[in-house]
Length: 311
Image (cartoon, rainbow, N blue to C red; front, top):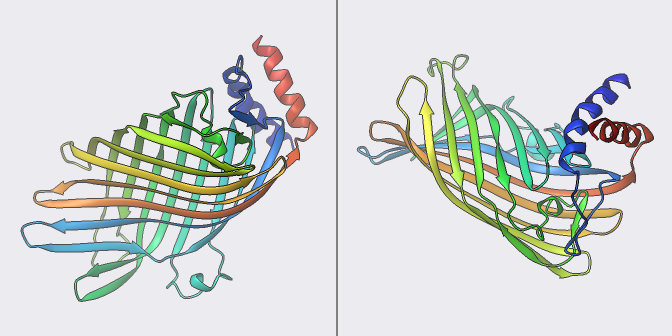
């Protein structure tokens, strides 16, 4: 319990500062005093495609599709989730010892949205025209995140996840987003693949989101972003990067209970080397159900003490 309290104090040191002066709006409602917990079923993957222009050849690297079971918790401006792929799901039983682990952390200081992600995959299929080879020991790892700024105060990004906020009236916003990811492909343990390599992608993506309140407690969300940046490959020069992102969701959100479906994707394209282009895509689809509990006393007291110290 002491460890949990220490983590909570560290989180809410920033939360207490960021939320100072934030007012309730007629356009959305916050549930910062509640502990929102949701269970979700998630299908996510990081796929790669190499396009050899001079040979008219495309090679796809696709992980085995796995269904992830996860838990997400949010209190005040902090949210985190953890997922794993249990073997009792039908599509996880015959995957050649493949593995998928994902972790996410969201922070909402003021009008900023901070997202941190981690993806680990083992076991990918190398697909070419006319055939496919399963590489059981090929691994990929991606870590990074994004920082966005919400221009329209009437818009609630936090309500898209339906955890501790609710959009009351339809609203949209422009949200420039800076994303940054380190991606590693490790073939050291896979026969015939050789060493490992990595690249770093940094992009600025102007994005527009819209929350459409279609009925009491029901909302549709959508977002689209197009941007550009640079990729920094291992041992090479920086190259131009184009990037696109999309989001769509549907949810039910009452005072205590919430549920919905959510899908988002992010794709980038850049020159890997010479006449070889690489597509890198993250696909994310989830169905979730959750409930808002009264926050434990130690969280409430810890938050109050932090705010007192910051005065």
